[in-house]
Length: 495
Image (cartoon, rainbow, N blue to C red):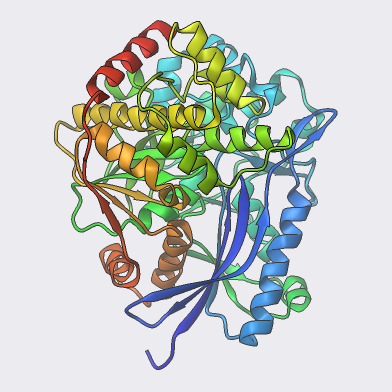
């Protein structure tokens, strides 16, 4: 191509958002930050919400800065966010109420209520999605149970990226990768799971058309284009679920690898051509989320760096400010494998005093209680690494083949201690990078949508050309098998 193409990736995570410029010359992508901003919950009398209007303002500010830098020379815009949360529109296309945060307590008890109406096995058979109380299905069920006025007047359901895309273009559609996270979609019928939804008392008329990753939605609406100083730029649905875009940027060759998208959540699994919906995947609570190019992400959610992030916030509220590097260095110095925590225990799901919860968990399970900051953080990171081993073993058991190497992408790769602990825990090679995998995958899908890349394999070659990776080999296996046995015992006791 005569000159590099400019793509804007708008990537919103649970802790922060970013507008990233990607310059693509046909062989490599070069990324640069345009705008970064914090994200987090807002507490109101009726519960925990996202500050959606501030996020919308930040999205537009990112586009304003791009317009100033490039003078309008922008090939495409793609937006991705976390999964499961949503907005509801009324008949006039107005947002009915502020979107709730997935950690809000309104879904407490909704799994049991759902199973009372539709057996657990039937829900999984129709959706193939991991059972988590935060899923859109249980958020909607809580509204149906409480006869929410917002649900009664709703005409359109849009997941978070779909809502922002609607505000950008006026197009009402749900992108496939994010639609599947809701647990409201039937991947084998390629449609919303309408019979199940009706039995749960959830109105089905609100669910819009589902479009595939790499769909050109529309150009920017005239009002938005004028406000931000851009022209008729196409808005493209990449994989609008951030994990879907991140997995598209795994720098792998072939198909025999395992992957982790590491951040607040860690999502771990394999990339497959078909969903795996059977008794074993139900028993192990795995999920089949939509991927790119007719693939599925057969995976499981793990609490990830949430425990570390929430510890850091707790100490900051107490007047002790630590960077993530500070916490990691203290964890490096701490004694290894003293106590084991299951990061997915329900005690760790909601915001609060995470250090005290980790200590209480260890005390309740009759283990040594970590006393200082480094010991607490190391305990959390080792728990995540051990849970990675459990998930990897279950994936390989169900697929009946070994997956190697393990690729880790995303912001969590900056925690090199966790990467090394992972290699030690699983006893095999770990390859990390790129850090900005979600933005990279977002841009790859934009380039594919506009005909500048012919396939996902070509896109992954571009990733390999563009970014360095770091390889971690197991260096210390001592104690890990014993610690893993303790994790298995804790998980059995919890069941």
